[in-house]
Length: 85
Image 1 (cartoon, one colour):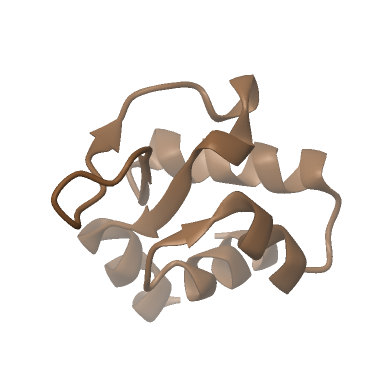
Image 2 (spheres, one colour; image 1 turned 45 degrees about the horizontal axis):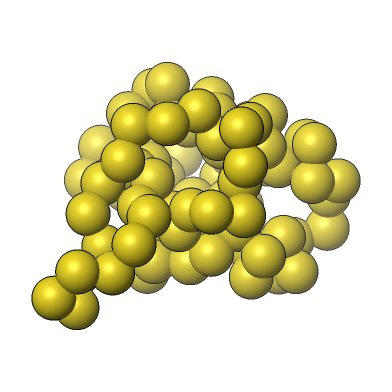
């Protein structure tokens, strides 16, 4: 796990928008998008789009299309990987 992946997962214990995540981290948006895509490919995060009944349903889109549309959350596997590092 890269240092950036570790820091990003640390931010994803709760649902967070791309905008908020970008503000909390010191890296270029392009680098953050690449990291998020890698974490998604590993199954360590999930993307969520709109709120329905107070919950954000998962979506299966490419982050690079428009990262501002989504909210992000670490998965159980992602949290386990984060804790084991």
